[in-house]
Every structure is written in structure tokens, then in C-alpha cells.
Image 1 (cartoon, rainbow, N blue to C red):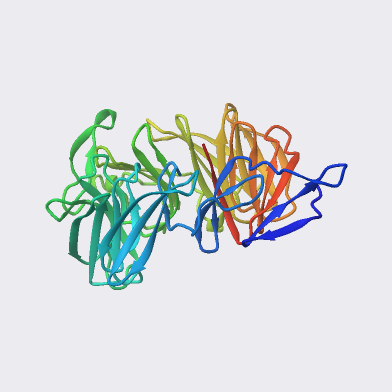
Image 2: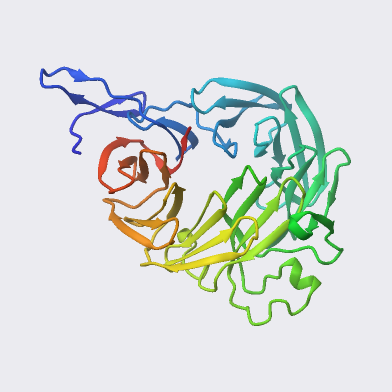
Length: 405
């Protein structure tokens, strides 16, 4: 669909159309899209590009329904929580100091702010706040980075960066907020129940980087896609030397963290994952499966979300460039480079490939539309045919994240 008339309004470009009598017809707002732009996270109308949330936020809840930002005040930070669908402020709280937002509970009832040099530090101050204000203020030795709250809100899962002043690896630990103490994670027992604490000396130390993460609200598990160096050892290696004999070529894995029971399991990905450009790595979760793709290598792996093992591998034509996955209903969409690969959810095979005019910048799908990010805009596609049904300008767009339901 060609767009010829552009109207600048408050920094947002609106696309207009005219009826046969020359009068401008009303542009429908369309579905709401969570997107990343140059200055952070925001929500736009898919039909107009109008920003619903302003200013942009620094953090979103796992379901995307709440966006959080901070406002610097004299000697303090005001944490502002907004409804992503309306932009309305739903909560505000003020804490002492100039902390940065680092983690938020799924219901936005708790937030964690961190203070200290983000490149390396000898000690870390973490502030946990709720609607009524500050709840915990803890100063810990070392470089400790908040990641996620436990389901009960009594603990905070963190990255313990090592060595703290010049980190090149880290371990995941749990911070008891009441005691102010860092502890090891649990080991999962049968049926993923809690077994025992990871023994001293067997805590997993990661030498890679987390690329993307998805949260499974029903299972209360955080799946994080990592690529790492080949000398990385998982907990099982440290407890059972030789458990990975014959697998020195594993370069990427999915770290699974139970925020309910405090255990973690790493699922190794096939050898070719993580050997190409990291921008091509992407992850999505749908129903009982976690999908992982390396677009540059042309490989897909599907993990059973309960058994935590790779149950399917699929090759597809490789695509250079940044990649994002979205899965819905009977189809999975991999937007990478200037293409969208469409996979059948049942067979996992590619059933179609659609061309894009520009480099893909994220993808999201609803029951009726597929949205693919482009430089400074979003294309709306028919999810069955790939036909473009609309285009909207979003200046500064860096990624389409999700449809706000």
C-alpha cells in the first residue's frame, strides 16, 4: 500500500488517507504494539504510530502490561509505573539515591534498583521498593546485578559478576532480601522439585552473555538464551566430571530458572548454535515449547518446556542479520535480514518465505495480524499470506517487541 501524505504531529508521523470527496478519512488506532525506540520502551498504535506511553520506559513487566521509568529528583529517584495500554500512571514511589531500574516483579508490585559502576565495581547497593516505598536497602561486596524476583517476592535472583572490578564471567545466585545474604541456587530433583542446594565449589560460572529471555508465567520459569565460550562448565560437569565428554563444541544453551523453587537447568543447543553472528540468535516460548533459532546458521531447535531437552532440530535457509521469533497458533515467524521464514508449529518445517523491503527489526503476532519492524516503521502483514496490509511510521524504531492484549 503506497503512502503519499505524511503529517508530523508531536514527533510522531501519522499516515492519512482521503475519501473520494477529498475529505480525510479517520485512521483507526489499531492494535497496540510494544516497541523499542532510540530512547527506550514505549507503546504505539499500530494504525497511526501515535505514542501511547511517553516518555519512554526503561523496563517492562514480563507480560508487557506495565512500563516503568525513573525520574531523577533532588537526591532521590521517583519510580513511575504506567499502564501500557493507556499510558496512565498507576503507581509511583520514591527512593533515596540515583539508582537504575534493574528488575521488576511480574505484577509490578516490586522493583529493584541498583547503584554502582556498570562496567565493574567493588560493592553494589540494591534497593527494593513497593507501592508504599522502600522495603530493602542492601550494600553487598562485589558486582551484583539483579535479574528477577522470586515468586514470593522474598528473594532476588542476581548475577554475581567475577572478578567484580573487571568481570569476564559470572554465576547466578539468590539474594535473601530479609537476611541480606547471597546463597547458591537449588538443584532440581525429580519432576523439577527442589532437591538440595548446589554444593560449595559446584556453582555454575558462565563465560558467555545472555542474548534474549522469555518468561513462562504458567510454569514460573525464565528461559534465557546464552552464547558462551567452549570451556564453559555447567553444574552437572562440576558434580560429575566427564558428563560432557564428546561435547566440546557446544557454544550456546538455554538457562532455565525456576523463580518459584530457585533451581536452574541449562539445556545445551546443537553444536552450530552460537558459532555465527550473535545478532542471529533468538528465542520464543509458546505453549509447551521453547523455540530457539540461529538465523545466520540456518538452524532451529525446539525444547520441551517441562522435560527441558531438545526434542526437535530443523534446518532452514540461513539469513544474515538480526533475528526475532514470534509463535502463535499454528505458525512460527522468524524475521531476519530482509526475510520472514514461516514455520509450521506441528511439523517444524518451513512452509513459506516472504521478502521484506528493509532489514527486519523485531516481529510480533496477534490473532489477526503479523507486525514486522522496519527502519523507522512497522509493516502489518497478513499472517497467512505475507501480504502487506498497512505501514505506519515510528521514528527511531529499533525493535517490535509484542502486541499488547
